[in-house]
Length: 239
Image (cartoon, rainbow, N blue to C red; front, side):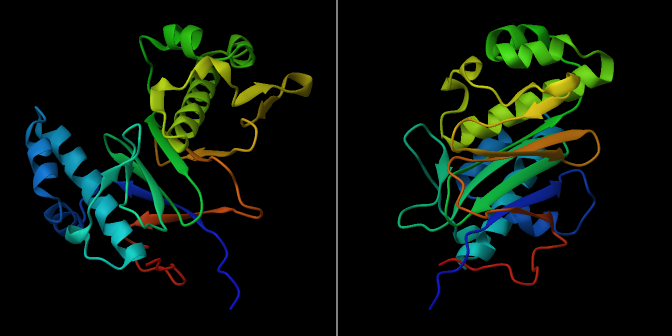
């Protein structure tokens, strides 16, 4: 029997939506997750955390043929959440108020990042400390809304790549580029050697990115919406 083609799936969730699916999703949280949820200071923060982690459990359960409340998590060397070995599914969750992204693959380490598009008081300091010279050059040529869009494109791509590596902010962000000046004033999207990065709008007012550390030939991301696509035709079960 031929080996199944590798997949890279990106799940989108509107954490602010008034949807009946959120009740069962949050009900599947573990005791530890509930305890952490309770420590958040506001109802909005508690809702964001509970829905994001309920979303994670609901989706992963379909891939590994487990009820959401049966899923157990472990951590990789630098703390990146993972499924216990032996596992054939790798994942990464990112969320902000109102929006979550979940990357899932059966073959490669993945990273996801979603950010809310809004002015940041410390954005210039982040650019000087964490952006590469080519990235800074692109931003110097941009103004207004274009500057903000480029800033978040760079930031989400860097975050997603660092998460695919399992390193987070411990990775020297200024030491690699995800965007650089192109011919005729155009902007060119790039990725570190061997990596695959893709950027996209992640719902109104949000920017998202997916990263794969080493991309199998022909791997193309597919996008799904939670909960509408929770039973899409052809969604693989990996056990």
